[in-house]
Image 1: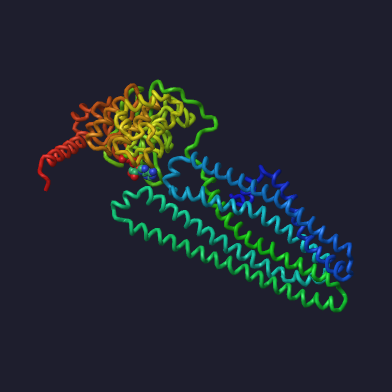
Image 2: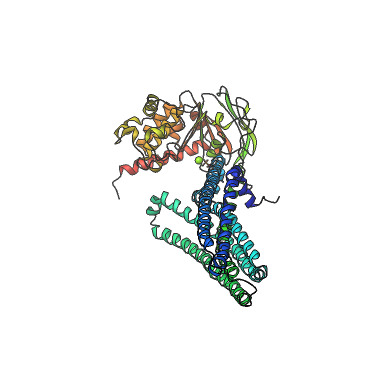
Length: 589
Ligand SMILES: Nc1ncnc2c1ncn2[C@@H]1O[C@H](COP(=O)(O)OP(=O)(O)O)[C@@H](O)[C@H]1O
Ligand SMILES: [Mg+2]
């Protein structure tokens, strides 16, 4: 399938504004024709005023000149304003479209595309498109109009001389096209490198703690410098092309003018042409080179914009592989059970991560998933809110396949607390109320209390109104975790997923969080993934997942009695814990 041309795709975004654009173009043609009139006025000025010494013309010509400038100025104002409006509107639409498309893409997309690169596309690539859109419309159309009017003037004044001047045209057009092509190529490279730079920035600024901890400052600085060097080389190569294209064109223009002076001057001397015609001609010719040069630099901007647009469209063309059906229904509140029917899942073609999971979880049940790391527990849990779709088999809620219902009705029923807490740089209150916009002040407080978070929140300098820093940087791990739990409590969803919610915590804050979790799981269907087996003892049922399959199932006691994988995991941890206790007892070495 051949892709739709990039330019025509950009024009799709211009379409809604064609009314303004048409008005602008009419104004532009009028303004451009005034440039032709300016050049033309040289003839009556010389021939009538100076040679024929016509006094009425002496008054008339200045008045006409004033009129020409007035009309030109007025219409320039209108079209410049309108064109900017069209250009900015297109950019506004494009940025909104891109952002909402990115938001609609499944989680897997964000695993593949670096964050900094996405940011760079939304900000810097779209800015380049903006340059192209406004300069194409403003520049190419206006300057081409002007060139045409001025060419009209020179042919009107003396077609033979005009033909001589036109001979140098191909000489000028060739470099424009050629440079443009090279420019686009380089521009693609420079935008890609900019994206890489922006990605390094993003990673190392958000992950600065790790950079410091591993003494990688120098390494990161070098990596950054290396990318900047690459960018520098590309930009300089580009500059060389731009810088050479101007003088080259001017020189070629000069060749044309020199030819005309030679030929036209001899015509005037021979009495076959008037000085007025000659100077009007030369004026028009000199005036042509200005818009001509602009067309060439506009071409560079245009090529840059096209390269940027290709990168933006590439993202717009990503089809979400987890999408809502057009006839998706609303899932009613869960009443009976969540079922996994022979669920298989693979992230990529090679390895199957889940190998035929069959599982029925009754409403109100607390199901614990245990097993060694990499077994597929998180993957299994991520299938329930459809962060990913099953590769085969199905997941049903009360018998309805979750792929048949709307995202909103499914996800609003699921509360998630993971090991990695996601908090925003906002107030404590807004972080708790994220996704529950209509929660009352009392409900927010109540959620914080149930999450064992009220104490530390009230000790913060501005209490609930304290801004917690990016990703909650100003809070401890346990505090962040309790805020996430408060958020889940407030959401009050009937299904709950706890993925290692307490794993990263020390024993003391774990105890606090554990109590918060006990408040949370009451009367909810809960999937709890826990590393420390002590935290799941009270679960109604425990399943052991090994290598993508359920290998054991039962209660804590029955599994211990069975003496299988669970018992082994338990013994291992028990030994670790005992060693830890011993270690605490010994004096520091
Ligand atoms: N986004 C991903 N893309 C590709 N493979 C993944 C992704 N996430 C996890 N995996 C792989 O899937 C397997 C199961 O991972 P996971 O479900 O996180 O295990 P667990 O939570 O039991 O530790 C692992 O082998 C892991 O490497
Ligand atoms: Mg996991």
